[in-house]
Amino acid sequence: MINKEIFYKVILIDCNGKELEVAKFLQILTGMEKTETRRIVASLPCVLYEKLDGEACSYIEEALDFYTAKYKLEPVSDEKEVYEVDPSVYPSKQVIALGSMVDYIGKRSEFVSIARKYDFPKNVSLNDTPFLVKDGLAEEQAVNLRQDLRNMGMFALIMRSGAEVHQVKKRGFLAGVFAR
Image 1 (cartoon, one colour):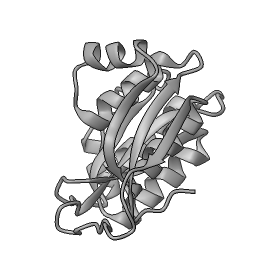
Image 2 (tube, helix red, strand yellow):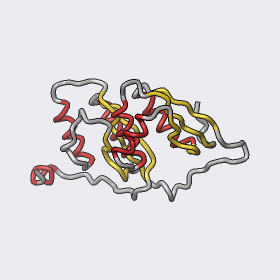
Image 3 (tube, helix red, strand yellow):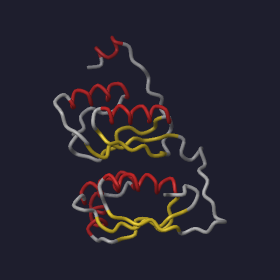
Image 4 (tube, helix red, strand yellow):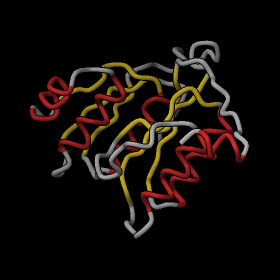
């Protein structure tokens, strides 16, 4: 169990055949180039983070558990050093689709419907996971988007983000018809 108030050292031990997915997740998480993240994943075991706060560790833990990767989280801070999240630094949330739990006919059209509802690109390959679905969401919108994705069989992760919050505007029926 992760204590969100202390720092951890994150060590990636083995990807269990999911090297590409873990590398893509690290690319989304860090903004590093694809070749750099693949090089990291190819040279296991390796230290991903020397000192990462507990909240960010919980995001990484959830993703690595989904990919059945082996990792170790070692506490590196003492009890006197407590981490507190400044809400002005991370005002919004981002949603990352980690993978598909189930495939069915009509999944693509349901994804396009969700993309229209939350105003994000529809031309994403659902098999090319993980991918960033939407950034700059308010907490409630991020939770609703994750639930919509889970309802269609996608495993999604909500992470904090430094982007500004952009409210998703509800469009009327005619706006949706003429937007195509």
